[in-house]
Image (cartoon, rainbow, N blue to C red; front, side):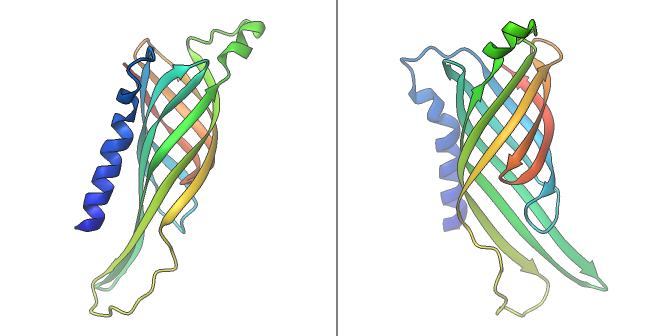
Length: 177
């Protein structure tokens, strides 16, 4: 219960931190929802979301969370690992560089950035054996990403990112509001 309360508190803090910057004019907010491929855990397909807010001078800040799970099931026996990642992220948007190349930066938005977060992990099985030690540790992690967003319409688009964090490749949809 303590772990759940801590996670809930951190998620609320991450997604409301942008509201604390009231004196800074906020332009756009982007909600990214996607899946990860080539997870850095031993398996599973991570799912997650991030919220980015345009801050100033081509910089966006926000928060993220991802969940990944993998396991094994055979003849009544099953086990699984669960991973929860959450934290803050920031990106530098390279759209200004595209104007010199006559590329419309209102639709295509390349960016690079970093993330800092916490990873928690836990193990479940259907046996009474309780002396199992997980090889995965929780704690603080640092991630980097390079990606781009393409807006299909004014409010909906897609994104792709490569980097180090939860998975090597992330694909998903973006909602602008």
